[in-house]
Length: 362
Picture 1 (cartoon, rainbow, N blue to C red):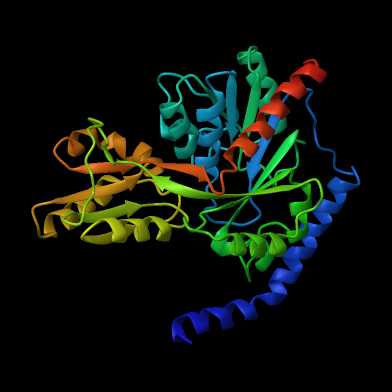
Picture 2 (tube, rainbow, N blue to C red; picture 1 turned 120 degrees about the horizontal axis):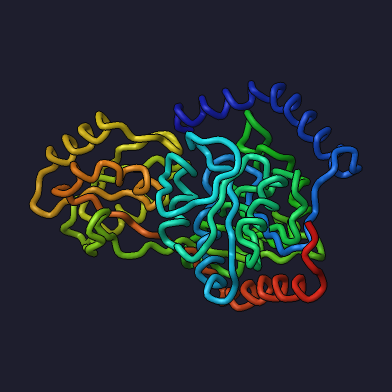
């Protein structure tokens, strides 16, 4: 066994007592919600919650964007996020002057890519939802991002995401593992999506994964991959392909950059990395360091690559970036086994049936 990872495993085992204490707190909280001692707020309105049980990236933003891309042409949609690392507090509805500092990086990403969507943030979702409906009374659907474990709002449809290489069913509670909620909480999900799967996932691997998850009768399990698009310049949006002659400097501040690095290693001649912690706010000194690393790279065909999430926090350096080949790599969720039609229909039926059966009451 590699000594580094062996030592990490031993260290995590030593954290088991803390995980037990944390688990007791989590189970008590869930018990109080389940028994309605702490009450969740329900709305006579279509609300979808997307989230996970673990810390780290499971592809929540690409899943939100998948739904926005699919349904925003037909329905008036609003997104509601906490707005992690923003400099504001309380409820904020994005407008033409909004920046990532106001609402956070991922909501800003939604706002830029889907200007027809109402993008809101608020720590207290039960308070923010009525405010959205007051400001945007024609809203047909609200999508809550990273909200599965936040039980203050009882969503009409819960979508639980779990990464293929980090299934919740094989994980442990913090700090021994990566779970921030109990494994048993998966039972509250209506749909489970296994994300970041290998492109050529076999039927046998699919069935093995389903057995590990052990879905309940009311739950449907889907499998998805991340598909990367063609990079575009952060300012001009001019596109530029990556090939085996391209040297890449990957700069990112996301929870799990390894799948992205793997893709670039397979696509480019080489890939150097400059990682920052998730949701990192870049400074001018960071930009100078990034440019310095880029300039040291040898070769005539080279570029800096960032994620869309990071781009919304880098665009503020517009004056510096004018002459820098800094390109944004878009990503999208795609379903395997031709199950996208089934998934799409499930969401469509939820929206339409909810609108038929309920009238809006605030």
